[in-house]
Length: 424
Image 1 (tube, helix red, strand yellow):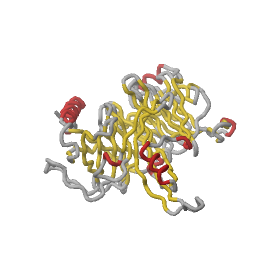
Image 2: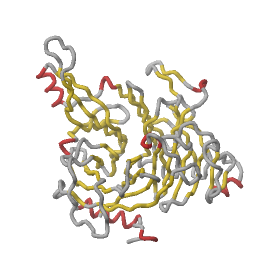
Image 3: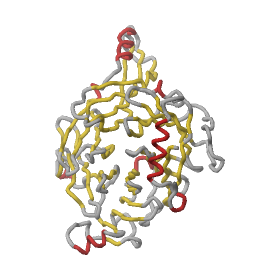
Image 4: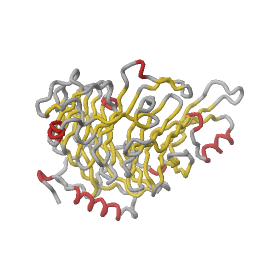
């Protein structure tokens, strides 16, 4: 069941997942056990196998994992590292102005595909020197093509969007599995109009890429085929966000309430052959002076809902109440979707109890989150307690793979750790 150094093999993990989900129908509110594997740590610094810390780590780092290969973006250090599950540096995409010259990996000539010598070097460990402005979100597809959100530096490259009323100066850069840079993605596809700030890149099970970007007034969702062709584009104005019927009717009945909807998270996914979006919405009600509709008397949390919408047209397919489905924690965060289940992670309202059958070999700390697996009707299939390593100060990034593995980049005092959790 275990590989070298006690690592759980992919085949063993998959078998464990199937067994865990098969037993989810009963006792869904019971807090279950989930095992954690601490993979490796990266120290802080500017060397090729280090990452440069920032004042706001959550905004400066991203992580993506596919088939046991990790990519970590570091916007402060202007680089992206490719690492094995043991922490071995396999490739480095770096800006020489911000990162010390590599010694562990061999530089390629500007990441170009052109010479056979470059391709031979790329078969092993390699480095790609290039110019980064602000590399943020990343993702990889099944071919290990790397997608990196970056900002255009030249003022003349910016485009003013009349409809949005903003300057657009962000693109998605792509790198082949052997380090060669491919054409960038813009709103229309390869070489298209830049995006507004990009908040997330997701690769779906069919290898299509979904780019989420936003302005103060609009959320934008673009989906591209694996060769970069535009498949769909959707704009979600914040002034026309969906409202559940129960909240809408309550607002109408009371008359003196104003409802404030806000998007807490967007998760693209495939359902059958359809491209869908899970839209997690938070609602706040504002009590007004019934006499003149004047200054607000009170602003209170009215609830959190999940809306399932068509990713191409924006049409609503259904919704359910999220907070009621996750009674053991505060308003949870949507961190992923896998196998038609939504992964919701929330902080415990109180010190959580020990999960059933906790192994004596593990040292658990109070740093924990409650994970709920919820289907598209709002039914909770299982609840787990995710324990974090001692010394964890911040979750820099946490995601879910298509095979239901949960992995995270965690900040501690002097390093960043990569961990993953797997089901029994």
